[in-house]
Length: 173
Image (cartoon, rainbow, N blue to C red):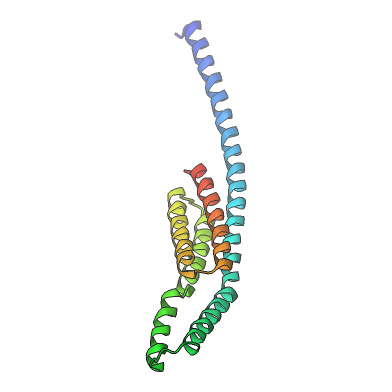
């Protein structure tokens, strides 16, 4: 025997659960839509970084050529006696230390890995956050090694892009 009061309580509970489930479904739809928007936006930022990374190649070649020429002219125009082979070995050491090729290549790989992970079915915000930290690390290294205004301008733009990505990732976490 079920009382009228008990039946009424069960009907109220069922109605409340139905409303809650409907709102949860609405929330999930909104979150999926927001997630797609965030994904598009983040991809734009990553693609911007990758595009700028490619722009660094001719700038780097020009920078190295100018630097070599400047050093060579300084020695040619000075009255200092020097050993040519020693100068060449020192220049090789100097230019290897200032070369950003390795960082540029790693940056490209990190960006590609970021997109791959973002496209995986199980997006993990913390993993994307970690990869974005690696991207920032490479950008910072490029900036500190390059010592060139045109490259520095691009480094600043890439840093702005990665900061935007990190802000969006916080929405995922």
